[in-house]
Each structure stands twice: as C-alpha cells, then as structure tokens.
Length: 271
Length: 264
Image 1 (cartoon, chains in turn green, yellow):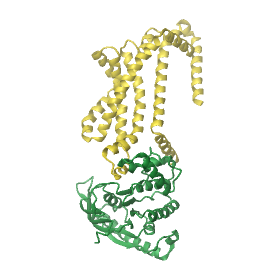
Image 2: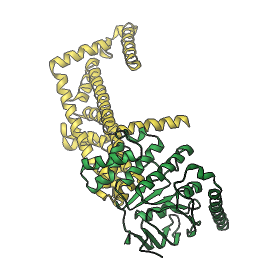
Image 3: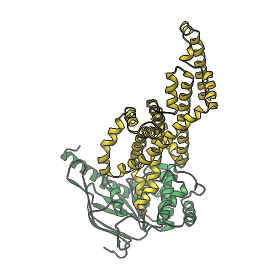
Image 4: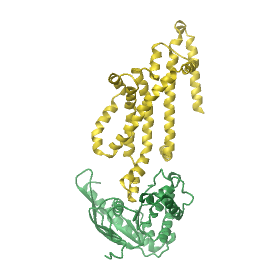
C-alpha cells in the first residue's frame, strides 16, 4: 500500500463490542484496510447496521479500536482533535448557542482569542451561505441550514480530513440534492479529504471519487468502486447511463449482503 | 385578562357567599365573625396588622426561614445530585438514603426537630430544607443524566477536555431541569414554612394563622394564608422568568414537543 502518498491509511482494523445481554463479544469489523489520497472524496456504504457510524467514530478517535492502525499524515490517530473535523448525523448544534457561537466552538476549545475566532467564523458562515444568520439560534433555522452550520463548524478548525456521518439523512429530498451540490462546491473550494458515510447509494456515487462498500456484520470491505464520472458534476449526471450502472452494481452487492445476513439471522433464530 | 376576570369573579363569589351565610338562621345565633371573614374584612385586617407592624414581623420571620432553608437546599441538593449522576459508586451508596428520606413526610419529622433544637428560626429552616432539598437533588440528577450524548461527543470530537465538556455542555444542558427542580422546591418550601410554624414557633405567618384560629379570629388567619399564597406564586413566577432568561432555547423546545404531541 502506498502509505507515503496517502492522507489517511487504515490498516487491518478490528473492533468488537461486548454484548450487553450476554457475555459473548460481537465482532463489528475484521481486518479493514484501505488508503485515502489527499483531497479525495470517499463514501462508505453498506447494509444498515453494519457499523459505518462506528467505523467513522473510530477514525476520529472517539471510540477506541481493538487492533490495527489508523494513520493520518503518517501519524497514528489515538484521540479526537482539531486535525479531524466531524459532521454529525442529525442536529448536533448546541441549542443554547447562536450560529456564530456554535461555529466558533472548535476554536474556543483550542483557546483561540474570541475576536479573532469571530472574524474567522464570519468567513465560514458566509462560505456555507448563511451570512446574516449569525445571531440566530439553531431552533430558528431549517434542517438544511442547521447542517450548513454543522459544516462550517467542522471546517473552521481547518481539519486535515472531514468525517461526515450521514449529514443529510434527515433532510427532505429536495434540500438534500441542493446540499449535495453545495458540498461539492465547498469541497472543490477547500480541497479537504472527505470520508462520507451514507446509506444512500445515489448520494455516495454522486459525491465520491471512490465508494467503499462494506459487507454485513462482521464488516469487511466487499469492494471499492471507482467513480470515473468527470467533475464538476451537475445534478443531471444522476440520470446518465454510467451513473445508473454504477448504482445498480453497488445496490446488487448490498442486496446480496442484506440477504446473506438475514439468512444467517434466521438460522440463529433471531428472526 | 381571562385570569384576572377569573380571580375577580372568585372574590365576588366569596363576598356574596359570606353575605348570604351571615343572613342564615344559624349565624344569627352565633356570630359569623368567629368562623368566616369576607374579602373586604381580610383587606381591613391586613391594613390593621400592617400598621401595627405585627404582619411585617411575621413575614420577616417566615421569609428568613424560607431563605435559609431554600439556600441550604440549593447548596446541598445540586452538588449531591450532580455527584450521584456522574459517579456510579456514590449513587449506589446514597440512593437508598435519598429514596428513604424522600419518602418520609417531613411533617412527621417537624415535631422531633422541634424537640431537638427548640423553637426558633434554625429548626424551622431545617424543616424547610428537608422539604425543598429533594426536588432540587432529584431534578439535578435527572438533568445531568439526560444530557444529550451527541452534544458531549461534539465537544469531544473537537478535542475538548472533560472540564470543557462539563462547562460547555453538561451545565447548560442540565440547567432547565435544575430550574424545574427549583420551581417544585419553592412550593414545598412555602408549605414547609407554614407546617414548621404550626408545630411550634414564636412568630411567622404559620404561627399567626394558628394563633388567631385558636382565638376564633378568622380575619388574620386569612391574611396569613393569602400572604403565603401570594409569596408562593411570586417566587414561582420569578423562577419562570429566570428560566426563560437563562435558557430561552428550552422554552421553545418544550413548546415544540407539546406541539408535536398534539399533531401526532
């Protein structure tokens, strides 16, 4: 594996959880390895419950892993920090803080001077298209706007890699499409390395350079699908034959995995 | 507006009821003024007690008991509730005692506290403390326990320290629940003030109520009750104001939850 040229390297990652009801441990991942190039946009998809979110949290260092290694710029990841920006699933804005105060959170935790932080935040709030909403509270914003704040909050600490956990899952279809296009624009602008977890195959293909397809639990990498659709991609790309073929291909793998795990659960008497 | 009308109508019914009762056969034989007082008489008595300085003396006494007992309840209840929420072992040790004392009616403890400490502000404040501490303690516990994990993770994901998690997430997220505890505690504290003074005291509004009812003088009795009620309502409203000032976002969320429940 070309470790030196890679931004993020995952080697032979293993994780198991102790089940709460019985003493046996549940294997979540076994031997996951892949490498991400600088400024690459990677999506993770897989059958639901396969542990995509857990995987992303391990990458961030929020959850410890059992075995294997994660290298960011050649350095081992042990704990969360400002070198990684995390965009959480649903509304994770602090409800008692205004948009401005939410965006500066990361800088504030690092002890950056308040007025400098505010100045910087103004730029990022404008970048996500929310200029003029600095003093609004999260509950005064729509779901799409809240996710924009989330994104600005993650970007302001200038992370080496952006980890996004189904950020658009709770948005309606139209808003989601707009947010996807906006995200690509921002990605183009900032050239961040992005790891994007989603359960939407379409979304994964539209956004990504490569799509990593996980198997059912215990999760392994089933396939890494390269998306060779030229950028910038307009929304109409989603109707091209190339795009639909890729989506069919990924969908076939996931369906196979879902059926497999259902069969296994039936044998074990879970279903 | 409707609330004000409702109060005025209630007082009017009270006045009319009094006038009606006074004209019955029974109360022609026994003076009604030993049993009931009309709102107008209550106001007159209020004026007399106020001018003589007696009412203020009782209010001062009761107010001190309330302040001492309630402050002590805050100083004890919030830290213990917090420790029980974050520390499992402390919770195991304290939980049986908290449940036990919480289930004990403080009214039943008041007499023995009088026996131990005599009459005065200190034992009465202790009764107020016992009445007020549990709502505060238990709501602090619940508030800290229900701090949203995803918000804690946000601060952790940015590399925030445990201390930063505490000050930037746990405290603000638990504040609404703690204030709800304070609001419940205010009501119980006012009741405790009255109860403690009924059992034995030399002054205070509860004492005043007891003293004059023993002498068949309902005027001052109702004055005492009305002052206690007004004080209870005012402190409740004050805490409501504090709540919307400290966590304006919470009131909104609450409204939205109610709305959602109605929609569903």
